[in-house]
Image (cartoon, rainbow, N blue to C red):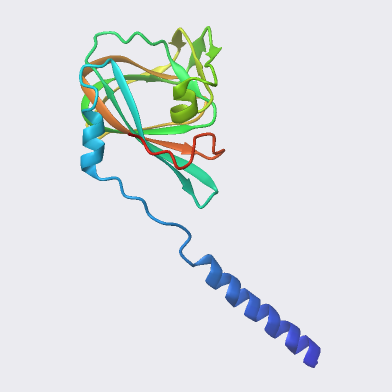
Length: 184
Protein backbone atom coordinates (compact mmCIF):
# COMPACT_ATOMS: atom_id res chain seq x y z
CA UNK A 1 0.00 0.00 0.00
CA UNK A 2 2.86 2.39 0.86
CA UNK A 3 4.51 1.61 -2.48
CA UNK A 4 1.29 2.39 -4.38
CA UNK A 5 0.83 5.62 -2.40
CA UNK A 6 4.44 6.63 -3.00
CA UNK A 7 4.11 5.92 -6.73
CA UNK A 8 0.88 7.92 -6.94
CA UNK A 9 2.51 10.83 -5.09
CA UNK A 10 5.52 10.73 -7.46
CA UNK A 11 3.24 10.81 -10.51
CA UNK A 12 1.29 13.73 -9.03
CA UNK A 13 4.49 15.69 -8.29
CA UNK A 14 5.85 15.02 -11.79
CA UNK A 15 2.55 16.17 -13.29
CA UNK A 16 2.62 19.44 -11.34
CA UNK A 17 6.29 20.00 -12.27
CA UNK A 18 5.58 19.30 -15.94
CA UNK A 19 2.61 21.67 -15.92
CA UNK A 20 4.79 24.41 -14.40
CA UNK A 21 7.54 23.90 -16.99
CA UNK A 22 5.07 24.18 -19.88
CA UNK A 23 3.90 27.57 -18.61
CA UNK A 24 7.31 29.16 -18.17
CA UNK A 25 8.23 31.93 -20.61
CA UNK A 26 9.73 30.27 -23.69
CA UNK A 27 11.19 33.11 -25.69
CA UNK A 28 12.09 36.75 -25.92
CA UNK A 29 9.87 39.20 -27.76
CA UNK A 30 11.45 41.16 -30.60
CA UNK A 31 10.43 44.72 -31.43
CA UNK A 32 10.72 46.27 -34.86
CA UNK A 33 9.80 49.93 -34.64
CA UNK A 34 7.49 51.54 -37.19
CA UNK A 35 10.29 54.03 -37.93
CA UNK A 36 12.55 51.17 -39.08
CA UNK A 37 9.77 49.65 -41.20
CA UNK A 38 8.94 52.98 -42.86
CA UNK A 39 12.63 53.78 -43.44
CA UNK A 40 13.02 50.43 -45.23
CA UNK A 41 9.89 51.13 -47.29
CA UNK A 42 11.49 54.42 -48.48
CA UNK A 43 15.02 53.05 -48.91
CA UNK A 44 15.04 52.52 -52.69
CA UNK A 45 12.61 55.06 -54.16
CA UNK A 46 11.85 54.53 -57.81
CA UNK A 47 13.31 51.01 -57.89
CA UNK A 48 10.99 48.54 -59.65
CA UNK A 49 11.13 46.26 -56.58
CA UNK A 50 12.94 46.59 -53.26
CA UNK A 51 12.72 43.63 -50.85
CA UNK A 52 14.52 44.35 -47.59
CA UNK A 53 14.70 41.64 -44.95
CA UNK A 54 14.79 43.35 -41.55
CA UNK A 55 15.25 40.27 -39.34
CA UNK A 56 15.30 36.48 -39.42
CA UNK A 57 14.40 35.27 -35.94
CA UNK A 58 14.78 31.82 -34.46
CA UNK A 59 11.70 31.08 -32.38
CA UNK A 60 12.90 28.89 -29.51
CA UNK A 61 15.08 27.02 -32.02
CA UNK A 62 11.87 25.39 -33.34
CA UNK A 63 11.25 27.47 -36.50
CA UNK A 64 12.26 30.81 -38.02
CA UNK A 65 10.23 33.92 -38.74
CA UNK A 66 11.52 36.60 -41.09
CA UNK A 67 10.18 40.15 -41.22
CA UNK A 68 10.82 42.43 -44.16
CA UNK A 69 9.45 45.29 -46.21
CA UNK A 70 8.77 45.24 -49.95
CA UNK A 71 8.29 48.34 -52.06
CA UNK A 72 7.08 48.18 -55.68
CA UNK A 73 7.04 51.12 -58.09
CA UNK A 74 3.93 52.07 -60.05
CA UNK A 75 3.66 50.05 -63.28
CA UNK A 76 1.02 49.25 -65.84
CA UNK A 77 2.37 45.73 -66.36
CA UNK A 78 4.87 43.88 -64.18
CA UNK A 79 7.72 42.16 -66.02
CA UNK A 80 8.01 39.12 -63.76
CA UNK A 81 6.09 35.99 -64.66
CA UNK A 82 5.53 34.46 -61.24
CA UNK A 83 7.22 32.54 -58.48
CA UNK A 84 6.51 30.11 -55.66
CA UNK A 85 8.51 29.24 -52.57
CA UNK A 86 8.64 25.57 -51.60
CA UNK A 87 9.11 25.95 -47.83
CA UNK A 88 8.08 29.48 -46.87
CA UNK A 89 4.62 30.91 -46.16
CA UNK A 90 4.50 34.63 -46.90
CA UNK A 91 2.08 37.00 -45.19
CA UNK A 92 1.68 40.42 -46.78
CA UNK A 93 0.27 43.36 -44.82
CA UNK A 94 -0.14 46.32 -47.16
CA UNK A 95 1.16 49.57 -45.65
CA UNK A 96 0.41 51.90 -48.56
CA UNK A 97 -0.52 51.92 -52.21
CA UNK A 98 -2.45 49.42 -54.28
CA UNK A 99 -2.00 46.83 -56.97
CA UNK A 100 -3.28 43.66 -58.56
CA UNK A 101 -1.98 40.40 -57.09
CA UNK A 102 -2.33 37.10 -58.96
CA UNK A 103 -2.09 33.88 -56.91
CA UNK A 104 -2.72 30.17 -57.36
CA UNK A 105 -2.93 28.29 -60.62
CA UNK A 106 0.34 26.96 -62.03
CA UNK A 107 3.60 28.34 -63.34
CA UNK A 108 4.25 28.17 -67.08
CA UNK A 109 7.78 26.92 -67.94
CA UNK A 110 8.84 26.55 -64.28
CA UNK A 111 12.55 26.68 -63.40
CA UNK A 112 14.20 26.29 -60.01
CA UNK A 113 15.99 29.43 -58.85
CA UNK A 114 19.74 29.14 -58.30
CA UNK A 115 20.19 28.13 -54.61
CA UNK A 116 23.09 30.61 -54.38
CA UNK A 117 20.92 33.56 -55.46
CA UNK A 118 20.79 36.13 -52.65
CA UNK A 119 16.98 36.12 -52.60
CA UNK A 120 16.93 32.33 -52.13
CA UNK A 121 19.56 32.44 -49.36
CA UNK A 122 18.18 35.40 -47.38
CA UNK A 123 14.56 36.07 -48.36
CA UNK A 124 12.46 33.21 -49.70
CA UNK A 125 14.34 29.91 -49.48
CA UNK A 126 14.13 27.40 -52.33
CA UNK A 127 11.93 28.85 -55.07
CA UNK A 128 10.64 28.23 -58.57
CA UNK A 129 9.95 30.92 -61.15
CA UNK A 130 7.95 30.77 -64.34
CA UNK A 131 7.17 32.85 -67.41
CA UNK A 132 3.56 33.39 -66.29
CA UNK A 133 0.83 32.08 -64.00
CA UNK A 134 -1.91 30.06 -65.64
CA UNK A 135 -5.44 29.94 -64.16
CA UNK A 136 -4.63 32.01 -61.09
CA UNK A 137 -6.95 34.24 -59.05
CA UNK A 138 -6.54 37.98 -59.46
CA UNK A 139 -7.38 40.48 -56.72
CA UNK A 140 -6.82 44.16 -56.01
CA UNK A 141 -5.04 44.83 -52.73
CA UNK A 142 -4.67 48.15 -50.93
CA UNK A 143 -3.49 49.66 -47.65
CA UNK A 144 -4.66 47.62 -44.67
CA UNK A 145 -5.21 44.37 -46.59
CA UNK A 146 -3.52 41.11 -45.54
CA UNK A 147 -2.81 38.19 -47.88
CA UNK A 148 -1.42 34.79 -46.77
CA UNK A 149 0.46 32.87 -49.47
CA UNK A 150 1.18 29.22 -48.53
CA UNK A 151 4.24 27.31 -49.80
CA UNK A 152 4.15 26.17 -53.44
CA UNK A 153 1.54 28.80 -54.33
CA UNK A 154 2.41 30.76 -57.48
CA UNK A 155 2.14 34.52 -57.05
CA UNK A 156 2.99 37.77 -58.81
CA UNK A 157 1.83 41.34 -59.12
CA UNK A 158 0.38 42.07 -62.55
CA UNK A 159 -0.05 45.82 -61.99
CA UNK A 160 0.90 48.41 -59.37
CA UNK A 161 -1.66 51.22 -59.60
CA UNK A 162 -0.09 53.29 -56.81
CA UNK A 163 3.42 52.70 -55.43
CA UNK A 164 2.98 49.75 -53.10
CA UNK A 165 4.69 49.07 -49.77
CA UNK A 166 3.96 46.03 -47.65
CA UNK A 167 5.29 44.31 -44.58
CA UNK A 168 6.11 40.69 -45.36
CA UNK A 169 6.29 38.04 -42.63
CA UNK A 170 7.89 34.81 -43.80
CA UNK A 171 7.11 31.71 -41.76
CA UNK A 172 10.05 29.30 -42.06
CA UNK A 173 9.24 25.98 -40.30
CA UNK A 174 12.22 24.14 -41.86
CA UNK A 175 14.71 26.88 -40.90
CA UNK A 176 16.07 27.45 -44.42
CA UNK A 177 16.63 31.18 -43.81
CA UNK A 178 19.66 32.37 -41.79
CA UNK A 179 18.49 32.83 -38.19
CA UNK A 180 20.08 35.88 -36.61
CA UNK A 181 20.15 37.81 -39.88
CA UNK A 182 19.70 41.54 -39.37
CA UNK A 183 19.27 43.73 -42.46
CA UNK A 184 21.33 46.82 -42.98
